[in-house]
Length: 332
Image 1 (cartoon, rainbow, N blue to C red):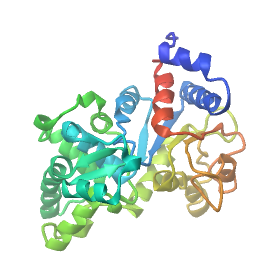
Image 2 (image 1 turned 135 degrees about the vertical axis):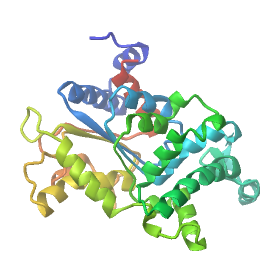
Image 3 (image 1 turned 90 degrees about the vertical axis):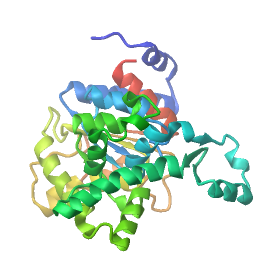
């Protein structure tokens, strides 16, 4: 067994109580699940790509510590935005002090703000739009249909963006996913920037068939077949081989975790095991019907997790917690 690196040693020594201890427990549970022969399904909400999670997530993918991803359309595209336009991004450390007039000035400069980071529209969004539009139009003319992530993989694999790379591609989790042909699911893609752009190109007639991009229900159908094939029972009763590591809340997590009760209750595939590990990093509170803030045990009542499923919740900032857990899993 490889000796833990300095980050893992630091966590093990200092993270002894409260959310710190929950972080360490979740990381050890992640490693234990993989050591038993399990796999890990990761969900990505929020603006984790703009937070440059690829610095650690890309290596998790390359080392087979992540076996599938469900993410928002924003995370799908924003990793590529950062890949080609990193030098044009602007950080606004005093973002809490911005006035409406300050925000309007950013708009006038086409700088779209995500908390303390501004994404440059022309250098990032429009450059990727141009590249992916070529793929949309080509597929449309051939009568072919692909999922949103498949179009992004096509753009990456074509090499048409390589001259525009402004970060080391080893730090892009989408480049790593494309290289691995990682199974991906992107529900609600329509609300992302590229989803909006695709709608516009359908309205203008550049793309004739709105169904050229596959979405929604077809993603759930693909997930159902993938989970049925890939998830196997592990040693402990009720524990399956597919773990669920959730960053944030929302559709990125809600959509895929539902596949198990759907398989059991709607397709009567009762032999398919429940999720075999569950961890959520969240700052959502458990109140007023908040599903993103619900404690893991609530998922037992919905047939998503079992009594014996290892369950962890770290109530903290995912931009801090996720890289630390990944570092521990990687032995850094």
